[in-house]
Length: 329
Ligand code: UDP
Image (tube, rainbow, N blue to C red; front, side):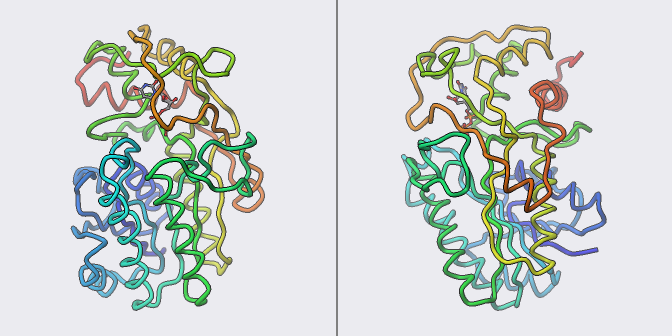
């Protein structure tokens, strides 16, 4: 049984990781400023309300709870907002990690699992994307994540930090129990937006570009169920706690799905076609992002089991339908 400080544990991915930690007997202590996270998503351990840029608040949390490791999810994630507010992104996403690393060093804690992203690859030269692909992000968001990866590499040279940079592809879905799920405000992600439109609860969904060089003209992504993602985090944490040296690893399925294929899955699951309009391409969207999963398989022993389009959309639908008060059957 290990106590783990989960920074940003009230957010979408963090809360699902907390659930997975608790399911195997670990104690997740959530440290979150609740700027984007949800108090009601903290169900599996204590909540410490604080900001990662507040070193004293971190020092107090480490002293009180004595975690053996840290998992870090707290970041600004909305790509368009990053272009409009770069300083806020660099401050929270990068300066926040400097503060976190200082506090970890003071407390003598070495293992850190960091939420990175396939956005560090920008528009990749080859797909599927291996971890050796050059990191040339094309957004402020992606550049802040790359900067943290580099910060971790430099800090690990002291010998007092062992980290995993997990480069997620498209996190989606919800806990199959329907107790927690994806709740961003504003919501920009494809699956919740498509479900909302299918449920008739909003305007038609905007499909950003149908003239890409793909078989159906829409962008291709690698959609990974959030509980599979949580499992990958537990496996990475195990390695680091066991003394494994630092590593970066893609977390995806290796399968690409187009936007239209997701809309088809939404129709199959909900029984309703997704009302949509074709909108201009969204700035910064890469044509095709699909993970090479070889390292996740060999290093972490990770194989997704919940990440079919049907399961992802069904689990997301169960959660959203209950939140929206509409029948899911
Ligand atoms: N997308 C869309 N309409 C939306 C939201 C997303 O057409 O309302 C498209 C987007 O252009 C991309 C894919 O869906 O091709 C996945 O986008 P999302 O924002 O979910 O994740 P991202 O790939 O940006 O991390």
